[in-house]
Length: 114
Length: 109
Image (tube, rainbow over all chains, first blue to last red; front, side):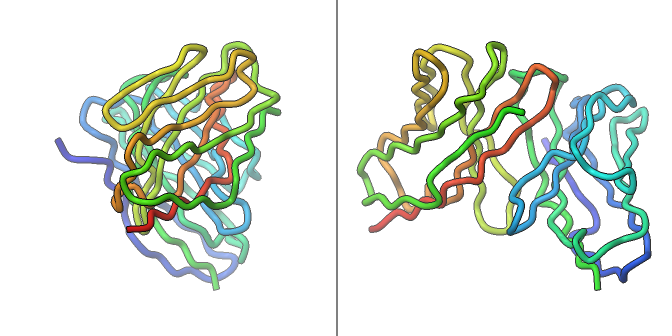
């Protein structure tokens, strides 16, 4: 079974631009969540989608948004990029939503904002 | 908000047991404790999870304190492939995922 696939692997943008990251979950998984990883703040939860609906959101500004499609694939968008948005963005999928569900992570998209 | 704390780094000799601690004193009654590990250039990988009772699987054991304010991940025989950053995570009743700062484990041959 293929794992979680994130594209692109690397991305370079300039301040003020917007970016869209893509995540394809493991086949059959219905929940997708997104995380930001930086050296200073560590891993932080962005949001979770289940059945095309955002179920929860972390403490990030409205510039960070996402969506989930009917095939469970998900996209994350960051508008008006700031230097501090440079990070590794990780996507994880799980079979269902819930506290006991194991998360399966992709390798991430490394975003650099210049 | 719930929070977890972990030592920044730990060392272990190969083939010896490793005990990785995590404090989560603000844990709520229904929050689950998860452990993941992350190798360089990879996303985190699931290790184990539990609620109240101690748990064992083929990778590790999880010992949860009776008051649930701390837990310990136990690797029974460390190998060089176990060198990674280990994250203690709370999955809360509000469906938030709260990561600890991670412990970087070095395994000495």
